[in-house]
Structure formats: structure tokens, C-alpha cells
Amino acid sequence: MANFTKETHCSCCNLKLNIFRFLTDDEMNEINQGRYEVQFNKGETIFKQGGPFTHVACITKGMAKVYLEGNKGKNVILKILKPTELVGGPGFPVDYRHHFSITAITEARACFIDIHAFEQMVKANQQFAMEFLKHLNKATINIYDKLQNLTQKQMHGRIAETLLYLSKGVYSNMDFETTLTRQDIADLSAMTKESAIRILKEFKDDGIIDYTSNSFHIIKADQLEVISKTG
Amino acid sequence: MANFTKETHCSCCNLKLNIFRFLTDDEMNEINQGRYEVQFNKGETIFKQGGPFTHVACITKGMAKVYLEGNKGKNVILKILKPTELVGGPGFPVDYRHHFSITAITEARACFIDIHAFEQMVKANQQFAMEFLKHLNKATINIYDKLQNLTQKQMHGRIAETLLYLSKGVYSNMDFETTLTRQDIADLSAMTKESAIRILKEFKDDGIIDYTSNSFHIIKADQLEVISKTG
DNA sequence: ACAAAAAAATGATATATGTCAACAATAAAA
DNA sequence: TTTTATTGTTGACATATATCATTTTTTTGT
Image 1 (cartoon, each protein chain N blue to C red):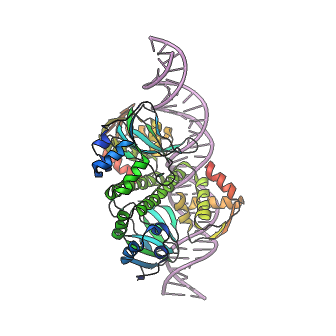
Image 2: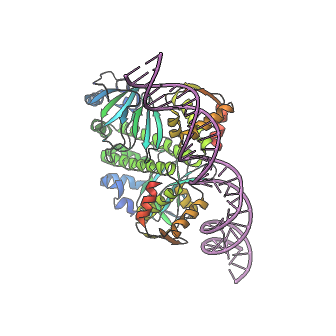
Image 3: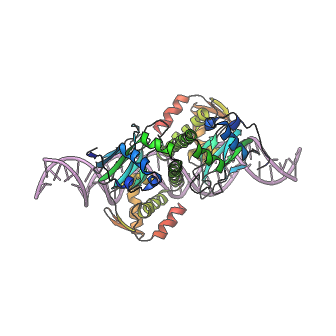
């Protein structure tokens, strides 16, 4: 972790985005006591799976990938984080360890909030607690979706799903330039990078998408939807 | 749903098992207002994916399977419930719908608690809220584990994992008689029933397990562990 | 600008896994 | 009991997917 600053105007907190909007000014001050903002270079680790879970983080600039580290160096990317998403993990309050890793996929900034201060807020503010619960359960719904995609569809369906996720869920554009590697796209789709590359090329040859290196263009989104559904 | 009774001595609540032990007597009374116990026959649906999420349930007798219903009739079984496990789902408080189905795999009894009463307790009792959070996040950790098993291991590893889960996690015995079908075992392992059957037979031929119809015996648990790890 | 490293692309091949069809065994129903 | 339906089993086969080796392209560092 390169630089860290005790930032007083961090977008996630002072603008009261996310679930922080339910905190009172006093509670926000409490949170602000143990709060840091840290700058990350592309590729640097923000959370490390297995490491101590001492802070929740809020991405304030750039993007990061959240992924499970498997045994043989095989990873599953759960989601791409962008501003101003809050991220903790299921280790709170179970074992206070991280159960996934997060690394920056662009230059990024993250605001770190002490887990104990956070826990106090959950206990003190009912509305905050309920919103946090909602936040967690939305994530669980996404994981269920992911579990089905990855276990019940075959490669074409999974790549279609990943392309739609990137286009709609991450970059909010039919054209996007990504810093994700082909391996990352494979890790989002639970397959080898070779397979991912081949299917991307098939889609390109079929005129469903176009790309050169990291610039993607979704031509026939509706057809991707069909492929994603029929698996 | 066959019979339902307004039970006053339901094991999950009155014995204050699970997270209910953190409730005061008054709070417990509140919960008891809108509480029912229902008897299910094997195969009957307890929660239906997509249906309204009006009550959380606590299995008080028998067992049930929690599963995601896929498109082409392909299901993924997330877990087997036994007494006295509490089960809600990520629809609370997101959209108040069920995101998985639950069906009884034996004769079973479930205690239903009104979701609004439950929500009141979460809001009113901090400790209860934190325990509920812990409960949810433990489930999430299990799902992460499942996601990795099912996407990064091949069939032998997945079946080994399933056998260990049944032996250690469900029946707590090296010998167990299960009401799960081969299709269920396949749905726990993300493969077709034919594949599941073939691998079970291989394990039997290799002297790792033994079985006749639904009576299973784990002979070499350590070897199953190895297979499960090396995928 | 150059060399070195990393990422992307491609083809050949092996293997894992699903599909289909047939049949056996078991459980449920009449 | 006999019949019917469900579940389990097996084999032959098709196909999806990974692996490996090699080459090309892009990025990075000096």
C-alpha cells in the first residue's frame, strides 16, 4: 500500500453515499476518527484472502476486482468494484478474516474504515443495520446468480453473461475499454483463458461483438442475452 | 402444506436455540404471537423460489434441501437443513421474495416466524442483530466454498466433497442412510446423475466407500479428503 | 529505442463430461 | 398381487473443455 492520508473529504463518507447516508452527523464523526484514504497502483492488493479483517473499504476512485483464490492458482472473480462501493466481506463478525482478495485493476483509491467503529454503528443505528443487511443480501443474491451461471451453463453462455455484466453492470456502455486481462475475463467466467479467447473470437466472427485488444464493442446485445439464457 | 398448529413448545424457540437465545422473554413472546408449526411430508415444498417471503423458518424435525432452481430443470442444492436450523434467505429485506426453494427430504416439521416480528427483533435487539449477521455471513462463507468446489474441481473432487459433507456435515457418521436420491447427490455436486453414479461406483470399486442403495459407508475418509483437495 | 517480460492468439490433442438409449431395480398405486 | 411410475445402472457415443506447445503481439523496464 503506497501512500495513505487521513482524508477529510472522502467522497464515500462525506457525501454520505451508500449506506452512510443513514448516519447522523455525530455518528459520521465517530466513523471519521479511524478513517484513512489510500492510493493504490494497478495490480496492488487491497484486501488479502486469509488476512486480518480490520477495516471495511469504500472504493472512491478507480476499479478493483474481488476474487476467491483457489488452490492451483485458479481464481474466481466475484465482482468488479467501482466508486463508491462499500466492501467488507463475510468475515465480519464471524472470524474477522478476509474470505476474498481485492486488487486494483486501475489506479485506485480506497477509504478504510475501522471495523470496530463500523460495528458500533451497526449496533447503534437500526436503520444503518438494516441497510447493511440489505447490502449483504443483495450481494448474496448476486452470488446465487453467479453460482447458477457458472455451474449450469456452458462456455458460450458464461462468456455472454460476462460481456453483458461488463457492458451493463460495470462500464454502463455498449463500448468499453477495460483494464481486465483475458485471464480476468476467464476468471469471471470459470474457464481457461484459452477457452475465453476462442469464444470471444467466435462472437467476433459472428458479428455479435467487436474488439481490438482491450476496446470492446457490443453489437448485438439481444443476441448475447439469448446466448446467456440458453446456456 | 398439510397440518399447521400454533405450537407453544417449539424446540427452536422455546428452548432458545440458535440466535433466539439472545432474545429477552418479552421479545420471545412477541415472536410467539405470529408463530406456527407445520408438518411436511417428504417431497413437499416449504419455501418456493420466487414466492413471497413472509416468514422465516426453523426446521424442528426431519431434514430439507435448500436449492436454486435453474432454467432447464437443473438445480443446485446449496445445503441440507436439519434441526434446529434457522433459514430465511437473501430476500429479506431486499425484495421479500424467496431466492431459493426448500423441500422436505424426510417427514419434517418447520416453525414459521412472521418476517415482520423477526424484523422488529433485528431492529430492537442489537445482540440479536449481530448474531443474525454472523449467521448470514457464515452462510456466505459456505457459498464461497461451494462456488470454488463446483467451478474449480472436477467430478471426482466434487463427489468426494459431497460425500464428506454428508458424512461430516449432515449425518455426523461414517455410516449413514440417506433419503437423498442420486439426482440429489448430483445436484449437490453440479453434474448429471449418470456421472454421479459412475464416480460413486469407481469409489466403491476402489474401496474408498461402500454402499447398497441408500446406505453409505465411508471407508477411507482421508483418501476422500485428498481427492477433494486435489480436485 | 531496445531488450525482456507479460499477455494474447492459435492449433493439435487429450480428457472430462454430457447425452441418449436401453434396461434393471425399486417404490408407489390400483 | 399386479401394474405403473420412479429411480438407479450401464454402455456407446458425441461434444465441451482443458492442456500443451508454439508463435505473435503488447507492455514494461532500462
